[in-house]
Length: 204
Image 1: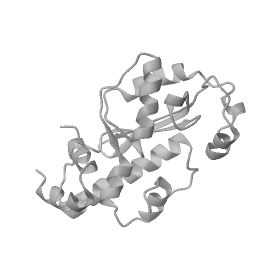
Image 2: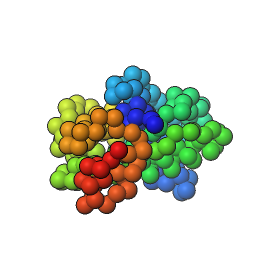
Image 3: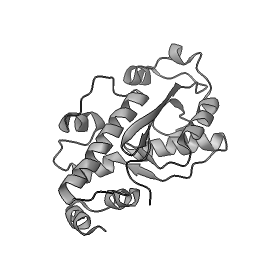
């Protein structure tokens, strides 16, 4: 059973909110976790074949001039598919990143064999007292040191990985579960908040 501390944490920056509206990826950042340690990273800008609007430039800090000489999405995503391998995947608000990963991989006829988990859904269950469950808020709430810029893909992936490990440690501390499986996290992420303690107390 795959352990929840060995996987790939990823984050996309994009031209907009949905590939169904023709939006494309403009940056991918990811970290590989192996037994709770970051062992590798991946970060590339990519040319989406369209100009990005001023709101996205301002939100991400990624400008059209930065993307002018970037490799096309297809080339970058092929390299990223190799980076993922057969690992399970995590993202903060994973439904967003999963849509873009699926869309970009469909274009290049690539796929991935791992499953997705969402650090936002996990945080809603493990960090219920947090003011909200935005990534930046959770980093501050859990007192994880941060010195970079949010809304850039690699930094967000690195911060998500740190948050993920912090939540796994919290589960171990509270419920004495030493080996937390990916299956447990997926089950936990769809469990009603009030039922979380009972699930974890009886797990295994």
